[in-house]
Length: 259
Image (cartoon, rainbow, N blue to C red; front, side, top):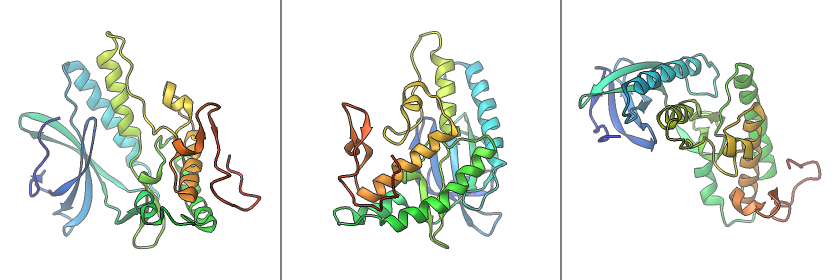
């Protein structure tokens, strides 16, 4: 993947790197300042796969640009706005970057940490409020043919400015990793890694890579149970019967039956 981009590096004469936020199979994510927009904070998602074949690299770029265009067209106040796609040559290698809004706040994973060990993690009322605020976002993206693929506490941020949940880290670019791996390994017959977190994604997604709108609903339901119980799905699923066993972990209203 190469060396991380150093703090202070300016890309495209516009984006000044502050620090690295994360790292994935095909690149890294950075927090940066947009020098053209009064040093407003933004997020740069890098796509820099190490590919042996030039033809596969060309196909990867085409797929990346297509996916970036799809995400750019999403216009919703609870989704980070994708601003642009640009290329930059670093150490002799072409890197692709998607620029999107930075959302100040804490993920629901981060919000859960200080509550774990308490009798009440997230209250029933808090989780119902989350569902009411986030379900319309899923309706919106599904109506435009987009499936998130990775709904989980790590990918929902409670925005600092208004407390609303914001859905981040769409799986579209991650899915490119799968598609490119398939191109690279097709002749060798090696299966590509599939997208989704075990326990937060239905089995057809984990095992076969099949995704549908209800895949995101499954992820949101699993997220709700994790917030209510403070336990990960692996601790709430009976491995012998592959069924959720959460009712003994938390006392809820009779009408609360997500599984």
